[in-house]
Every structure is written in C-alpha cells, then in structure tokens.
Length: 81
Image (cartoon, rainbow, N blue to C red; front, side, top):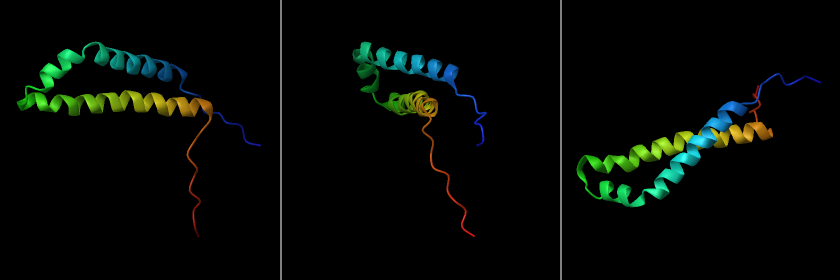
C-alpha cells in the first residue's frame, strides 16, 4: 500500500478562511457605502466585478483546501489505450 506523503494545507486553509470571513463581514457591515459607490455608474460599475473576483479567489481557495483536508479529491481520469 502506497503512503500519501502530500501535506495538507492547514495554514493556507486558516488564512483564506479568515480573509474570506473578513471580506463577507466587511461587505455586510458596509452595505450602504457599497451601494452608494456602485450606483454612481461610470468607472464605479467595475467595482462589483472586481469584488466578485476577489471574493471568488479567497472563498474558492478556502473551499478547495477544506475539501483537500477532508480527503475529498477529484477522480483521476483513466487513460484509454
């Protein structure tokens, strides 16, 4: 039986979880300010797009590390010969 020598990303998991939580809490606590800037239009219209990418990166990395720590991995595709 082969041993799994891969280390689990506990540190990155914790950091990304904290950053992701802070982003969500900051967004919820400042909804009025966010709505004010987003409704201005013009270049401010890009703020939701940028915010979506930032939230997606941190939350996605956190979630991926979460599943890795639990041992859930994608199935490897078998090579057809």
